[in-house]
Image 1 (cartoon, rainbow, N blue to C red):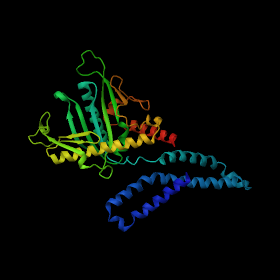
Image 2: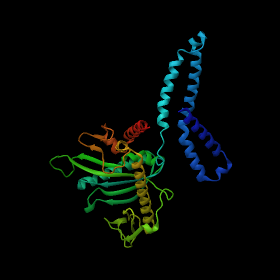
Image 3: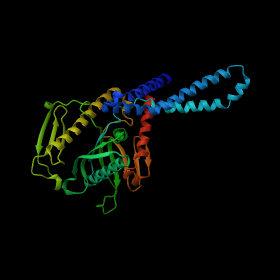
Image 4: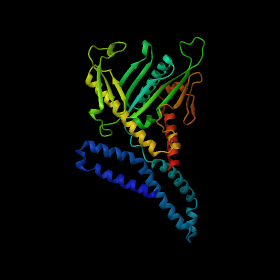
Length: 356
């Protein structure tokens, strides 16, 4: 462990020196990249330096214990167990910090919510999830942009599908475990007998891909334009500004009609398409790398897996992957997700430690 820590300390110092170079200041893009990496090493370097200092101190104390100076032995005997405990605690913290970080964690994210089984009630629940993630983003100082919004069919309330771009520090890393089927149990407003109904919505969280992450050939795209449709207002216009892009090799289809400009709709659709294709590539690599056991853990990207239940009569949320139940439903739906998200991250770290 000491060798790993020392290598990171050396790397941290090298990055510090590079950031002080006058030349690097002229290249803002490169400077930002170096500064980001420098910051990501800060915590492990601080704890690593403390760990090495304690190990050296322990070695010195052990020499004293094995020596003949009884007076010196008496002086250090109370400090020895404290140092050993501090080293053990730091080792546990460093093990987690030294787990290879998902390179996509710092990316922005594309979050997709779709109503599932349950008709109008599923669309209302999808709208609740949409509001929940928007409030969470606001609390975390993340920026949001609606890329696509489709209301419930038939003019009813709720959301059929919404796609949101979320940008800011750790956007993908914080939300990536939200992918899957979210189930709601509650009495719909239209239910006169008070019977609890079960409905569902699906959430997909994708790392936002840049051109450098995934290459898309123009020849692989089929682009159709059509007139936007919907309940009125900005969703309807008389020109063919809506865009449908089909990626022929993967048969992935993305539509966007929310903007009045065809160009803007195309840009938004391409952003979503890139991220979906990038996510497919990550999933393929993930499956090759991980064992069957590993794939069933928290980090699964299986969109069909039921991950969480929102039970309104009991005011609880249960995450089925880690068997965690919180009786804080209203707080949760108001965007206070950190307790659940932190528990999911911790479980993932534990499983990674076991794998290592």
